[in-house]
Amino acid sequence: MTTRATPVPVPVPRTAAGPTEVTAAVDIGGTKIAGALVRPDGTMTAATRRPTPAGADAETVMAAVAEVVADLAADPLWERVRACGIGSAGPVDTARGTVSPVNITAWRDFPVLDRTRELLAGHGAPVPAVLAGDGVAVAAAEHWLGAARGHSDALCMVVSTGVGGGLILNDRLHTGPTGNAGHIGHISVAYDGDPCACGGHGCVESLASGTAIARWARDQGWTGPDPTAAGVAEAARAGDPVALAAFDRAGRALAAAIAGTATLVEVDIAVIGGGVAAAGEVLFGPVREHLARYAVLSFARDVRVVPAALGSAAGLIGAAAATTHLLEPTA
Image 1 (cartoon, rainbow, N blue to C red):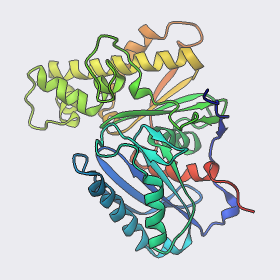
Image 2: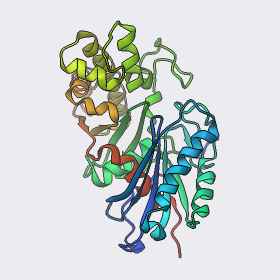
Image 3: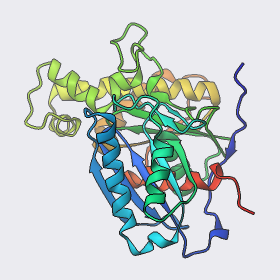
């Protein structure tokens, strides 16, 4: 029988670390692998990134992580690193330190935590390191410094190459036994929908991710010059009917998932970030319109949907913030 994990406090800066110490942060996604050094107030320096070689073998992907860590180690502040937080696309297994991202097919039960610890030690920083799902990291960041600040119960979503999420419940970050609580991208909102890369059917990610939006638009005959979701968004803003339909379809999927979450655990705000959220009202308009039809019970219908405040920095800030509650306090 699985033991239910006790929710842990939402991370706040650990003032005992001192103002001169920093946290190394690595954010691993299906499109990019980013890194930064994060100060105790959440500001970042030494930011760096590499494209994710998602179709390559496991070691090639890890080599990109190694390049990011090497960039950070070249910064003068590296000698002040006290810990490292790793945020990764999921599923993750924080107990074992492994990841199996849906959009990085070569990584299945990949020991990214141990491998990153080896990199840190190799660069003269044998510091503690922790692993968190990217959605959990974003939730921690947005509740600490972003759009969910001041809300006791929140759903934070990342809509990009994939769709992830994290939950704040009763002012506490709810991670679940393996760190995957709030992984909303693989909730099915269309029971007879198309197969998803995770093995399920009709998942939010298979309908609302940037990849899904662009693919559906092309399948419907859209032939814009930019074949990405950003290109579809631009066409939608210009009034292209297929592009508008692609975002309406995505918005409906997201609305169904948000309404279901609000009904289940009574969140009062849903924060949406990630590359697809950059579409603005092209995405948020349909989400809010469909949410009014799905979230109809008295305790769910007032849930607000807002853009994330921290943008692309949220994953890195959240990965750093995770170290404040996932590491055992030092004596």
